[in-house]
Image (cartoon, rainbow, N blue to C red):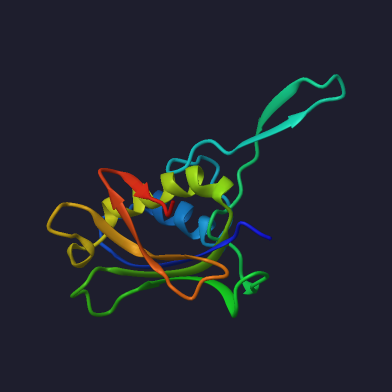
Length: 158
């Protein structure tokens, strides 16, 4: 049995994204090269045991929403899109991403989603200040749950 979730993000982002923000976001979405300096998610720890059995932590940056093509554990395709809106009623940028995610990725993904929540348009904000960023579901379930960022922290399924 796999511990895989389907992550579906649908966000409208305000027009305050800098060129550096856009470059890093495009990289995370698998839509552009990695910037020299990462400012949104700054550390990508990868832990392994060396030849002496000692734990070693290295930084291995990789796009968090960059899978494209056939899904492995959920039906359909994995995609990420970022479009500049012509009509800015909801926000200047439209972001949609559908990915497969393992709970081991929740911490890093939480950093990115927390940052995205700060850039989200008002239509995503609830009266309690939390931000709807999309949906998540366990791969064997047909029932998706809202994915919310509250006080800068993602509320992951239990």
